[in-house]
Image (tube, rainbow, N blue to C red; front, top):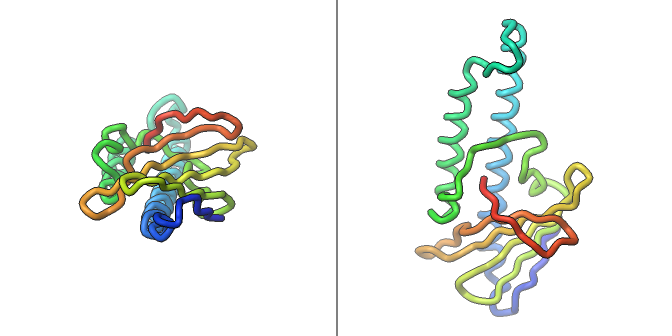
Length: 164
């Protein structure tokens, strides 16, 4: 990952304080998503062996989704504002992991123009598509928390609201 600071000299020293916890959250999110995906794959193998039709839910899937949601909430509550949490989370997982780029080849840009908001953008390629995520960070009780998550596509100036 390449990290570029596009903040003024006044705010540049805050880059690591703001970015490192965000990067850690994304790494933990990716690890959890990978684990749940692999466990779901195993449930599907067992479902097939048991002769359960493909259109039926695998035994244990509901419990796995409840666990995923619970564990994801516990993770996100440490890093996100209530505003971001209210957008929802835990509705999908997959391979590759949505934020897996944080462990590999991506460009991260840190932007900050005022003391009450910082933006971290990730630019990456996944499945042949050039995509981007924007994380809006705000200070809350002396700690920088994620207050907004957006996604978009390279070459487009628009951003779409996103959730975990």
